[in-house]
Length: 284
Image (cartoon, rainbow, N blue to C red; front, side, top):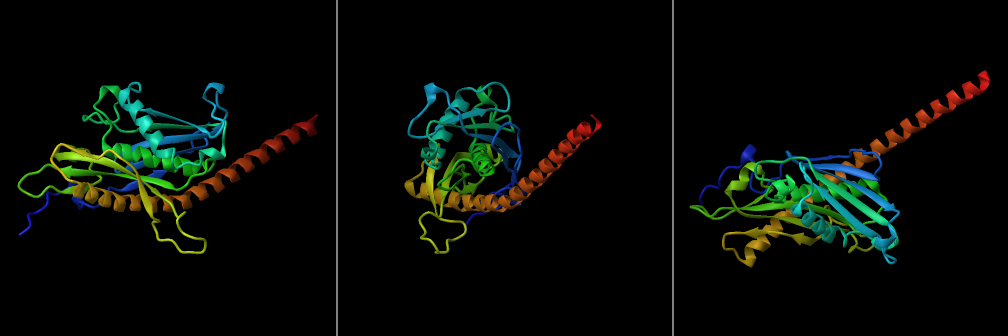
């Protein structure tokens, strides 16, 4: 008789994500920005580009990709700089940088939560946990969708998978572990996938979500495991990433509405300014 699985916070099953949230922040002086959250685990990211690049960083064949990651507190330390390099390896294959040579595409991401485990606390902590990294990757993707200025091969979506410590019951993989579950994990990791319909011919209906390929993972565990378990973790992560993709697709509708409202407001303000100028001319 199979043993009962440990209960999870908020009554979640082992294959259930926390509530997903995507907010397009509309930050000033950037081309696109977005905040992504798995429950209380959230990050914000902005995208600027293509913009002018310094001659020393100019690439004649493609745009230069610059990524800066900031923790919740303190200055960016080794953890944040290593994560910047990781995000560059994830998004470089997903962007069509060759469309804009001799330019710069800049990403700035920041954690919006920090806990006793050290997640998001920069050099003062002990690294970024897998769920926070997944939130940062998804926020960056949403920021690219918001910007619309950099062509992409597909949509990058990420989720975290954790492995419970071995005990009386069989070790179990869980999707999207939250902060309170970290002490019970023997291992965890983030999985990033690229969703794209490019493999389908024109006029052919594609599934929803579309097919995906694994771009990157940092899944590790202190307990013994085999390739089969890694394959199970990847399959579980792929299902979760599919839900993130659907949330991204759903958020595009609200993005279009916000753009329309912003344009209408801008036009109204412009008309008001014109009326004021005309009145002054009449008075003169």
